[in-house]
Image (cartoon, rainbow, N blue to C red; front, side, top):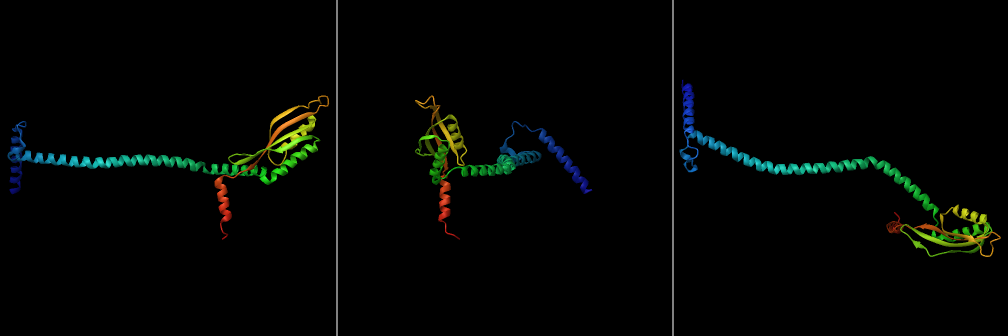
Length: 231
């Protein structure tokens, strides 16, 4: 049968080619004599060359893709870190907003306790009235140069009065209870010279009140709001 003959011929051919391959002097093998090599050796050489070519091409392609993959992984880690950070901030956001709202309310309450520049003379009159009410002798109650701070203006007053201990204590307490913020500093309380037996005392102190001063950005926004034409 023709099919059987072809199989036997192929088997004999392979045996012969294998015998020739075993007899080859591998150390003396020259590429210039590749045309005279056994067919099986040629096929194996072609297969090896193709395998090496595919490996080289694959390595080059994989190298580029591996660099891109490493870069993508690094970017993924960075994005995950940013996501975690933003997730934590988002979780605390309602609490932060609540605290900010509370601070805003407290700030507004404090601002309402501060006198405006127009109210400063009235505040001085109230301090003077408190001294008169407690029957103190007023040496002087006068304003001093103002001091500009970041968000407020400091208005100091120099106060010097004379009177009994309880009268002075009542005056100081009434000043502290004024509806506008008044702080008291640099107390000097001493017996009045030449009147030790009468128990009269001299009080010298500095009182300070404060008026709110809006930051430059807030003032510009308010000014722009006023200058904007009505819709």
